[in-house]
Length: 467
Image: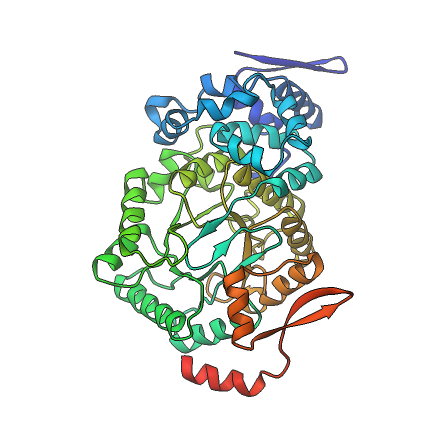
């Protein structure tokens, strides 16, 4: 089926839904690299106007990748909830946008709708939204998950404490963990990207993290961000795995390039669930995604990178994760060229994930060869918590010394919480107060949690004990 629209005296025709979605996407370098982007702003506007008139039902009958060729497509179609979809079944993409922005689309309604929304529907409506639209709707979506603490409650912003080290040195990792805890970071997860993916090295990090969490009775969870099969092997060896991690993408071919499929992910989740390590819930998966991953693997099937990204959320949704993280600027300027593109992509990803019912966080980041700087990241750092983002990263000094990219620091999380009146997960907050790391203060008539200022002697003693 073709789609057509006039802009002035120019007529534009789009031969299929895949092309229409790509041409309607806001400009980004990855789509130009793939050869699927609109040729100019007029063509993009025509595509967006044509897309607004597409009935949502079309997305159920026009698979972007044939059902027989792709297990992600099969997952999307086979698990679509027709009953949940019914309230919006008669709407076009444009009417869906209006509904989402209106008062009837409250948190309860959006939660009920989520199983009936496909990733392609979410991607489509995001393409005709302004930044403020993406923020407003995402803020209304409420997704709460639990393991040892409760993530995603209203008025809360969690953080992943990321204590990476170039050689996985235990003292260096421990110092970063203690530094982060003293700034109130780590309630989403204490998660390490290991310098090596060897099973013994991963097991050593798992033992160390487990020892710290249990010795100090910290209500949080740990994760070593290794391949899912390595986590399964660690579990088989009796190691203390809280969360199973995996990078995922929106096509079967892209997931093949990561060495995973739905069956392997299911095996990883079942292995973690069997350990019964959660105390307040059983969300045991942690997924990371990012626009451009399918294109970089030549596995995008001619689909624009933002729609491919939204399809990855169908994979995540299947396994009921504790956390989903779009690592928005990490893949580089070939896919998101500058700060403007990174900001827009981060808000799109967060919106689509939350609309689909996922606990979305964002690694607000950039590589040093991108046309972006910390001012751009400060803008996204302010916008995402305003949009109800579940969690962000916390890293010493914003500079990851192992992965060599720029992200958000422990101080950045303090800024976001202070500016927007947000707090940590409740169990983690209680622990910080009980341990005397934070205290309560009344500022401008409102209660605020602040790090204590008299911890210098305790810092050295605690570091010595942990290391």
